[in-house]
Image 1 (cartoon, rainbow, N blue to C red):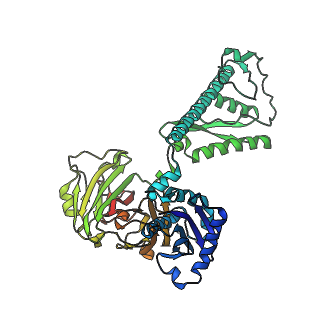
Image 2: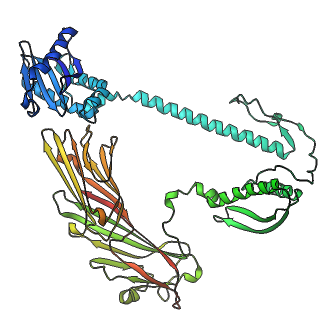
Image 3: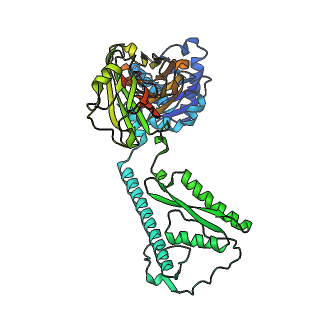
Length: 551
């Protein structure tokens, strides 16, 4: 077979992309062949309905494939093997969706060079190469191991330079503080730059300066800002400055933050002088208030997402429940299990012997087990979680498990959500329809993520989606996500297509979600002390999927 050229035409007969594969043909001759193609197919109604068609002239053969609003055309010699030409045409038709999100004229023109590079990987000097889509993608990406090594070395050098710069800045600040502590005035180098080989030393400071005169008794327009977490001498200097301005200061108390990590001294300050002094204090108090509200230094290490959803009381009860399920793609539950643990945390010594009354009215099929330190007789008769008469009390400020349960699922209808994944293979690729159904409307699911794997070197074209979707090219998956699934949107559909692959490529489908509603509704009714007095408590429930997949 000899392929003269590969072209992409619009339905109006405009040549969008053309690539010539032989050298013994002039440009004028090739343009003549391209101009003749729209005239040869004319207004034939069946041209857009047949999968593969061809037309011949005295010298060449046009093999073309209608693809939405474009034609993919191969110009070959008449003695070429038409079966091999059709196979090559199919590969060209699959290359276009790989680089273009749609088959319209604008998208083709935006990726014309990408298509030409891909065409060159398929045909060389008129003869087809033995390649597939994955190999074409690898060749056109031109991934270089040497380039990756070079970039890693460059990033390491930049990181080392930043660390050296930070160390140099710390040395300069340290030298400045030492000079100030000895009553010396530090001398600074030129602001145009700092040499990387310069080392701060005793020679970097100048002669001692004369002591400063005492501050005037009258109002002063400015002052040093209050430095949080600084030394006591800095705090005393600030307080002395305020006293010199005529302000009355009375110490009140010290407050501890984050387990004695940071101490802040508060003062009652009566402003008796000018408005300038009032502004000075307002600025310092605003900084203190902002620092305290932000959580101090400990907020730097604590992520915002880890903040508790409920206010923790002195007695806090948390239930963590997870589900594992394996569902067949043809229907039916292969395996399913729900496990949960109830943990207790008390914050006071007088609460270490409390009793917790649980509600266990709807636990059919669940196997419950209490901690060995709990009174099993009270639990079996009254559903009461209570420490044994001679048992150890609850530890303070430490989560301890007191109850756990397990439920084995036997039917798919017991699952909180079900999925119906239906891939349909055809000559143009694979059409995939996925539908979810919320089966437990008493459970509201949050952050639902359904991950569907895809065939290699394919880009999905989404036709219908309830919620949002994201195509992760590096992981070769499409992620279908919904922020909330409840009774108002108990069903939803995702529909997409890919140009190649078969049904096994889209499994296993993984489902992830979280919920505040428990699968097994075992709840806390009341908490009391040993003498029967009620106790204020807080409850936190978490239900999430651990390993939920359709295989």
